[in-house]
Each structure stands twice: as structure tokens, then as C-alpha cells.
Image (cartoon, rainbow, N blue to C red; front, side):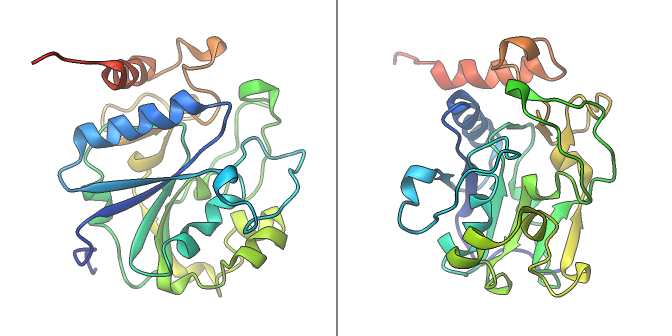
Length: 232
């Protein structure tokens, strides 16, 4: 294993959706609250990719960043390691521990979920699509130099399954495994006190119908910390 010690700053790219703005900021706050090393955040926002990423919205995609997430290596100039995370996460532990798992043997590292979604629908009435490697791409530690296939042209034209099933890699042997605790699926998995990052994949507490979901208290605590102002 080779630790990602060359970069002083941990680069985190976060999916940004205009319907989940609160989720983006609460996630960033949760990372800051636990991080032991400097961290930089880049929102993967469609408005910032005009002229680079041109792809009509697919009726099956539930977020604006469903495909643009795969531009993370390009946005990183194909250098070093970068983490992509959906916005509907909350960090409960130091992501330096996640970056320390970076292993040069792999082009990408993910939590290799092996499950079938329990629901047919998720937040905002979106269809809960079912496919092999479901949710693998919701958190990806990219070894950017080995992901040069992910050019803006390719990401704009490849099929959804090609992208989300990592068919842009030569084989699945290039995909390393991360502990599931870094992408603990709320509502799909039972409560886990050892979860390090939780993922509100069905819907987060920022949606009224999910206000009482598992780990809702942790999300509201991060939101409240984000809104806090302390006078000297």
C-alpha cells in the first residue's frame, strides 16, 4: 500500500445539485469538523462546466451530477489522488483516514456494495434504478493519472452503464475496495455506530419526508454548526 502523502491538501470534489444545496454545505461542514489535514472542496456544478460538459439530462438520472462526477480526474489535471462524493453524505470521522487508504495498485477505489435496493422510489419521486455496481460511484477515490480515459468528450457521450460500472477501465482488477463504513447506506443498511461516512441514498433529512430517517440527528447537527456564529 502506498499512502497519499505527497499532496499537502486533500482534494474533495462534491456533487452539486440545485435541489440539494443544503446537503452540499452540510457535508462540507462535517468534513471540516473532523479533518486533521487541510482539505479543499470543489463543487461539481453544471453551471461551472458550460462549454466543457454538454450532455442532455437523462430521464433516469436523479441528480445533476450523475455523469459529471466522472470529470473529477480531468478537473484534477490527471495528477495525484482526488475524492469524489455525492452531496448527500455526512462525515462522522476524519477523511484523512480515507485518503491514507489510497493504494497505487488501483486506478480507482470504492466501497463495493453488493445489494439490491429495497425501495422502488427515492427522494423527489425519482426511480430507484437497479444495476450491477449500484452506488459504487457515489464515493470514488480516483488515482487520477490512471483515469485518463475520462475526458470531457468521453464523459459527455459514454452510456450511463459504461460510466457507473467502470467500463472505462481495462478490468475490474483496477478497482480497489474501501471499507463499507465509508459509504454506509442509510435506509438500506442497519444502523452502524462504526460508520465513518453515511450516505442518504434514498433521501436525506433536508427533505420533509425523510426528516426522521436514520442518522438525521447527525445531519441536523452539521447543518446547525454550518449556521452558527460565535461572537468573540
